[in-house]
Amino acid sequence: MALLFLKQKLFPERHTKSTQQPSYRKPLLATDEDDDSDTLKTSNGSMDHDAEAQTSRSYQTFRAPSPSSSNYDVESTTSSNTRSRIDPRIVSDAILGLSDGLTVPFALSAGLSALGNTKVVVLGGLAELAAGALSMGLGGYVGAKSEAESYQTTVRETTDLIDSSPTETAAIVYDIFAAHGVPTDAIDTINASLHASPDRLRDFLIHFYHKESEPDCNQAWTSAITLALGYFIGGFIPLIPYFIATQVLVALYASVAVMAVTLLVFGYIKTGVVRGWTGRDNILAGVKGGIQMVLVGGVAAGAAIGLVRLIDGGQS
Image (tube, rainbow, N blue to C red; front, top):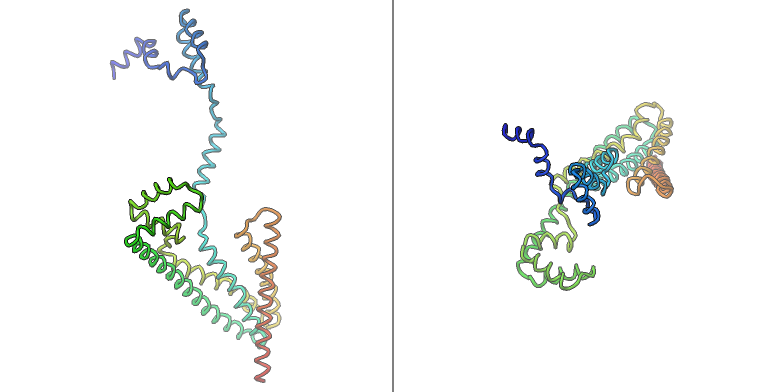
């Protein structure tokens, strides 16, 4: 290291000439005339100036990005890569649980209001909430487990098909790619590559022929919890006025008003999650979805009230 330091101090020009490569100093868009002019400059003893000129031209060939644009690119790339995306299955389970919770318990509480006792409404509503949440959770758990079992069955059947009938699997691969206009020669190459690895062929057939994907190992518990919580939260909202008001009619009217606003907001949010939030069409669709939820909840509540009055009147 000491000898290298002394060499750089004693022979700076020689070191510069040896480290700089002419091929890197030549601009990408340079011509032979530029090389000749640079050679004339060299005969006048301005080698260092010529090296700097060529270097500057090489950097001017492609404009260097500004610091602001580079920072923007890095930030945009980072944000796009780290942006979290909600699992569509969780969104679907949450919408299903909330929609059922906002309509069924509300209709039940409205129907029980015909009896004229807030305690009966609260106790009946809480009992229905507990039973409904457990039922929704168990239904989601069993459904997710059934999907996992169905996927495992598909894997076994596909594996047996690969082992027993390579001709049939080759025909399936051919039909898949031929439907998209892929040439026969390319399909034959793909077929040979897939059949060289049974695992790869099995994954291909499961994804592109059976159109199934491997479910998450925790999907059953996630669906159960999402459905149960969504149903309980949605069903608890219409019971809140009955905890506050002492008169049944006052609590019923307050519950109707709260649920009308809640169903309208929920219908708008549900539609926005599915379609999007911006744009005139999406906004109109969201309002339409909210009104639709209000109508569904109103019909369910009216049917429940009428049924309770009919049963109570028949018994009296």
